Amino acid sequence: MSIFDVQGSEMETSPLLHETTQKKQKTPLPKLQIGILMLVQMAEPIACMSIYPYINQLIRELDITGGNDAAVGYYAGIIESLFFITESLTVLKWSRLSDRIGRKPVIMIGLFGVGLSMLCFGLSTSFWTLVVSRCICGMLNGNSGVMRSMMGELTDSTNMAQGFALIPITWCFGSFFGFVMGGTLARPQDRWPNLFAGQFWAKYPYFLPCAVAASIVSVSFMLVFLLEETLATKRKRNSNATGEQLSEEYRSNESPSENMANVPVPLRSLLIRSIIIPLANQTFLSFLDICIFALMPLFYSTPHYLGGLGFAPQTIGLWMALFGIIDGLFQALFFAKIVDRLGPKRTFYTGISCFIPIMVTFPVMSWLVFSGGADYMVSIALMCHLLLIVAWDISLASILMFITASAPTKNVLGAINGMGQMTVSIARAIGPMFTGSIFAFSKDHNVLGGHAVFVVLCIPAVGMLWLASYLPKELQNRDEDE
Image (tube, rainbow, N blue to C red; front, side, top):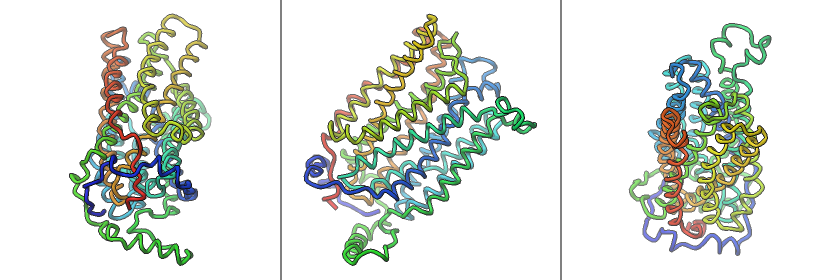
């Protein structure tokens, strides 16, 4: 990474992306490299999300709660948070390491950690082995920040919206396959007794989805070899390039800032307003986002008498998979158009404004079930709930654009994304434990009819709206500064 002068790096003094994109023609995306990057990234949501359809049933079957269904939320929240707790301790080091040795080696280490942890998770027969498997995954995985750095290095101000829209799209489609796989392949001996006979499948009823997830991660590991390194100091020159291209690449690679890329940048030099504001928004956003996804399977699996929907793992997997495919298609077809029409800040506001309506639909569904409403009414309410989350998700890609544009030079993208991923991991570690605990407390003590958690989560959502007002109206155009 390079040493840079932070003076004059505030967004307000930089050229505006909106004005520039009107003058400049959009640069075509490097489709092959971005396509490979997205395939590699897809393995992580497939693996991580595959546990959600069955995690609550697994906790019940391991008798961790002593038969108390209302207490499942406590332990589910702990297990879901452990990955983010351990990731927060190491992710910044992985991101900074990627600024020195390159993006590809760090991504490969992360994929290895995901694959190993999934195998351990599938072979777990106690609460503590579940804990160890999630900790392994978190400690070895810093891929989210590194892949965002790669996307930032593969795009410029004219095609950034298109590029960063692909990250949540990929996550959505990966989540779709993960939810389907987790719900369908859990307890295979019950569904296909002739094919999965034997004591092994009786002892490890959730190993199959974990093994399939680990196999997918292995394929992604091999795909990394096809990626070109995007870190400037580690790129190989293209021997088939024209003289003009080589000259341009030479000037880029030989610039003083690139030659100093291996010199660590003091993190305090990055603690400026133009960087802190987007990172703070991302942290709040990630906390609320993980709260939604911790609540969904918990609410779906909670028995009717406690105000939940009482879904089986297969049903949970199908509903969450349906959300994933709708979300992915929406982001792919409309996100870039929405940003072009509204601008990144209004797009972000539109997304985060959906959080409170999302919380409201949870008790509405509970009331429909409790009052004996028709199944189709519950399904309609559930579909409206999922569509609101789809609208919420446009904020995820929007904030990534702000963070990437906040980097004074591309050489510090890894450090900035590492800082962001560290704070995001802390927020995501707190989210499931906080949400699961408040959910379980609400049900145990019938606070606000068992719906106190939904009211409590609306408080930080209001704070999110206030914090978003400090984002710049337009994105910094870093391309012309470099």
